[in-house]
Image 1: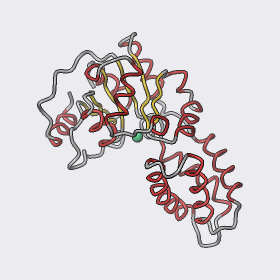
Image 2: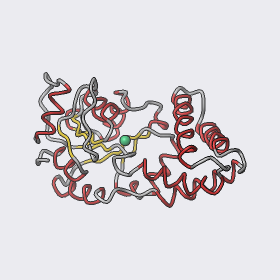
Image 3: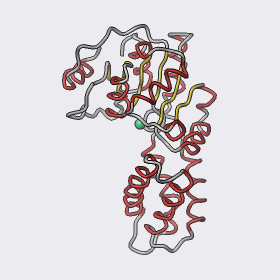
Image 4: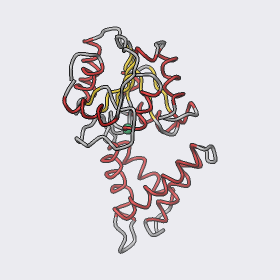
Length: 257
Ligand SMILES: [Mg+2]
């Protein structure tokens, strides 16, 4: 256990937890854990809307407006007021408006989706970390537990080759429940065939991945690539903190971080 992880545990005020069993399963978040979603989004948007922005409108302006509209539309999707087609149709319409309205929505969408396919890639430590997990524990079971729209997130997971690497994929939009709700972790555990005490979640989000998993009875490793402070008021805290995915896997499997 590193000093950083002790600090995170202390600040989150843990304690009173049941003893952990030998992990039989590792669950991974996807966005910003296995790929750099922020960088991919900025690159994708720049490639798609850059040529279409009206005078005086920058890609950064469009990014800010699209980010805000996504938050609203995503809430409607999660609440069941929009389906996936409606979610993306409305979002690309908001993108067209944000650029100044000169491009056709269908052209923007085509450009965005082509650019997204080209920019989405795994962090370089992902495949080595999965190989290390299998080397440390040959019978380890692996899952991705991710919040996202059902078809789109599945396509992204297929696009980066994770479907071949990780057999269990639990996508919030497909199962109708999202992190940090305990039910999505329960769904993953059922698919994996393991108990909560035998599973460890690895992810970048303090609330969705760490606190959510801990409340559902799993272990949790906080992947903190940027060296951020644990946010005040989010609890329970992680069992360990790691700066890269290979360290996270070692910590999750009890081999030291
Ligand atoms: Mg994430």
